[in-house]
Image 1 (cartoon, rainbow, N blue to C red):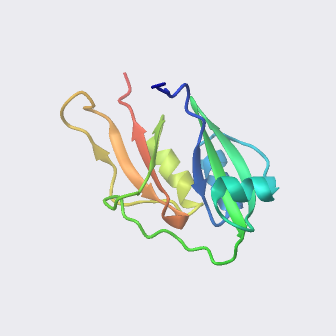
Image 2 (image 1 turned 30 degrees about the vertical axis):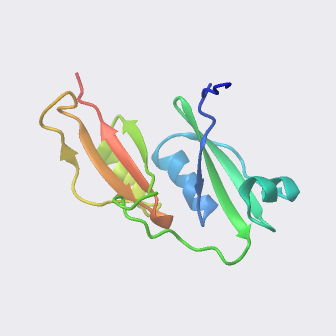
Length: 151
């Protein structure tokens, strides 16, 4: 039997309802490069996604060592928003190490990303001294922010 192995991580896809707001957050609040929207539709996209009649605008966010694909469907019209909580099966979140967690939180507020609680400081273990918090944005998107201790 032939055994397959992962050779690389391609990207992480996130479906959003407002591509302008999402790209603004990743570009302006997090400081990442964002591509122009790419309109996508047709049989290939219907077959790949399993969504008949899909019409999607896609932007790519370039993060250190990883690409994030932001997808905004204009069709079909019967889309729903996720209500999953971090403890619910299937919930995903992104985590970014940042150099100034307070500045990123402040910038993220302009795009609807709010901390779920005050920033926490890890007190014990190998991650001691790190500041960490989940921020929750539009479409129930959770972005974890982590600031490493300054030397």
